[in-house]
Amino acid sequence: MQQSGNFVNRIQHMSTLNITVIQSNLHWEDKAANLRMFEEKISSIRDKMEVVVLPEMFSTGFSMKPELLAEKMDGTTVQWMKRVSAAKKIILTGSVIIENEGNYFNRLIWMQPNGECGYYDKRHRFAYAGEHKHYAAGHKRLIVSVKGWKINLQVCYDLRFPVWSRQAVYAHLPAEDGIGDAEPEYDALIYVANWPERRVHAWKTLLQARAIENQSYVVGVNRTGKDGNEIYYSGESMIVDAMGETMYTKAHDEDIFTIILQKQHLDEIRSRLPFLKDADRFFLDANKS
View 1 (cartoon, rainbow, N blue to C red):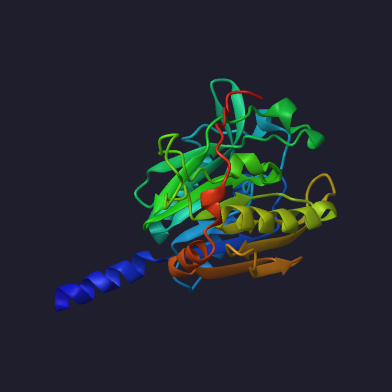
View 2: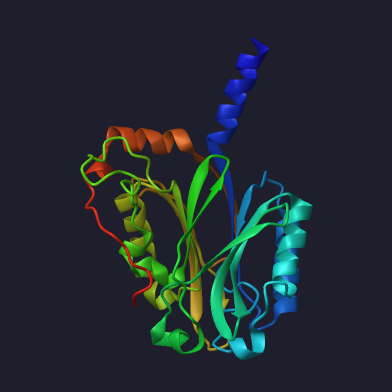
């Protein structure tokens, strides 16, 4: 009887995921100040933490000076992430300016408490701000697994391109088979961003659209305040469920918010409305621009 109870408790534990979003102003191109600030914010959290999400380029702001600010994967910011993740026993994620073999990347780091990390290089560079002139494009998606949850990690401008985030629920099935009860690729999408207020309506609308079309939770974490180019960011970080319903949002102010995502809620939506089985089949060649 005790074994049965333990099994039920274990399943219930795996069916939830605590996500903590930190919406913050950033010190322009000042790594030490940003790392100190975020460590203080993380240390102030009293809720149970499992995954903590920081904005895009959280240690510098959205800078087009990678030659001055870029680090290697063993550099200051990644080492800071490793230390904080281990000390707090959390997964810590956000994007950082990284140099590798002469190329610069806007790289999202997924740091685990044991020091192991995955990374995703931003695929869609924001040409309107000249990002494509300074940073190389990524060519591979990263879908990570934690507590039985699968999470697709993306960065800011990627949000405008729905094919890049599209669920491929049929990827492992032979072409002649129907989709049936195939497992979706992921359960949650995370976008880290520096998305200006002047286009924030698109930000909010697209986060909801990605949730609805992929029947997935979507977590979007944005910054606040003005950057070094006098561009204002209103935050408006959002957490959206698979029906597109907003579970959390905050405008203008800095904020720290923890939510418990429920796998049962997601499974019920997918079961009641099995739209993904009717999805178009396609092949995505990420090596072509």
